[in-house]
Length: 299
Image (cartoon, rainbow, N blue to C red):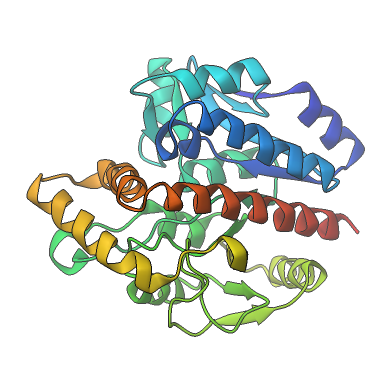
């Protein structure tokens, strides 16, 4: 059911730092071949930073921790791959199908494999209008349950960021903003929301994680890493596009798991590809920090 790649088995045997990577960004976040190029680049950045990348996905009903290049390309080229979260991960295994792992599912699989650090683009959260639709990502519940540190560029800017932070606080999930006093907004460095917590080095973050573990506190940690300034799209530039595509999605009755992929695709078109380029930059930036934290946890 859980198959670890050779590099992951060797890394675990030698006690080397490992960084988990998700596959929803491959199947739903970017078009081919940019999705495959980005996935390979992120793995390369983790390796060059001194850690071992473990890209996670489901193939033929098995959880693969550390996809090889052929398996990664298989998912990158595939159409209509099922997007797996906590509720449907066991379904994919029982049905023997392929699937890409969301933040929640990747956290579950990483934890099963003994991996403490996971790098993604942005976490899910509370969708705008959730007081009527109850559309809240399962990522938030998983962060409250599963002891994996998630390095991201904040929550996706299409969400209600203030409510997302409130929901994380209610669930007791620490949100550490790396080197900033403001919660980052995915493509933008600025959200207008104050950082719940701030730490300025990977060593400090690793110490925080270790202390949290020693205290017996359940659940994960969010490390919000701002996109590099040279690559960001200011929030004011994106706001009109975000509001427009959210209205489009409502008019077309797009809901649930289909919302985020639709919004990301439309934003890429409306921004002239700027949002897609920023997405690549932020996940590569997160990969460097995630590797540094994984290494510091082993120090």
